[in-house]
Image 1: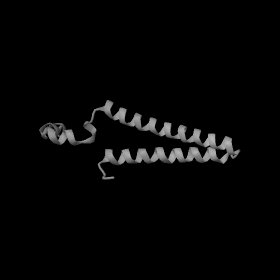
Image 2: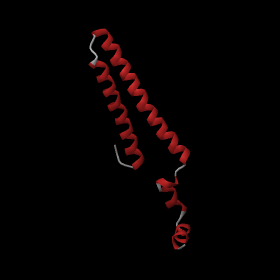
Image 3: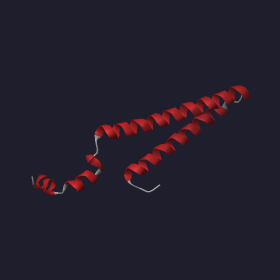
Image 4: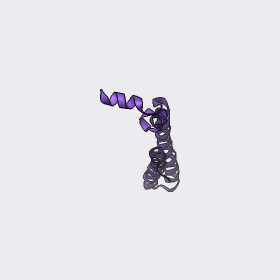
Length: 89
């Protein structure tokens, strides 16, 4: 009861700065876009690895392409997480 009263007495500018007051649809859009970026990078680099593996007859190039895609996609997610948490890149 006391905490509800204290929350109502805070100025609105402090409430708008907290991450919990962000629009949930905006948060969903940001994270679904980041997930799509991860998936696309894995598929694209996997396809490139498969293409080079078919030309050179080395299967490990496909695996290398998928691993590079995961690294590239994860670095994009890490950059996004830093921005959302407020850290400087």
